[in-house]
Length: 278
Image (cartoon, one colour):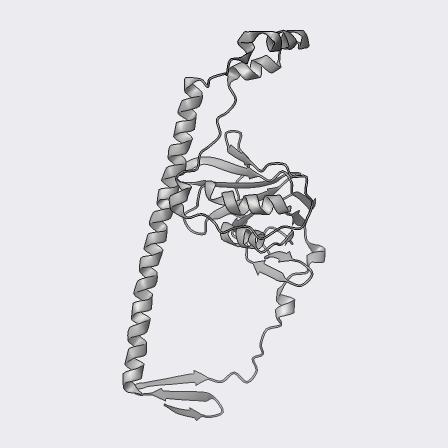
């Protein structure tokens, strides 16, 4: 290999290849500290509870996947709700993080879900959103994790027919712990959707207190309520949609692995050519 330099060029000659690189005399490395927005002026901050961080990482695969960046809407409107939809499952699904909260103004942003899941898995409890377009900032006393948000126009609004997944209440108030890795697409197929309560159960709560006490004393009230045919059909349809989304995700994963193997093969062939020239 031969190397040459002038005031304007740096030249590398490796076998039959010659590379001419321009020299920038006025350029400077960017100031990284100024590239990260200040968290003091954030419009809203997600206070992610430890139990919700683990629940998010373990169950995020149950939400539908988008076609490009696995778009996920984070809706901080007094509650902490994650929302997603896909062409194969147009009915949106929501994840309600009941132990978490927000500080600041209401905000609705769109993000690549893998970055939010990574922040939760790394144990960040404070995730700042300066606005709907600036980078999101997860920070603690010694670390900072920054990622770009997606187009705000892709954020999904709330819908009355959304499927909802709720995190269980937790009495602990410690810092988020590192959650386990996300399950593979093959395990996602076994996930299920909870059945809605039977109409008879709703009617029972609307009865007067005296009738409720009488129903509890009656042997017939101990009989287990069975879901209606409509409830069973809705549950089966939801499970089929979840299975289809998991299968599509598995296909995308296989295609990505094939492309990676092809790229690695081409890179190894180029390295071999360079070794032969040297």
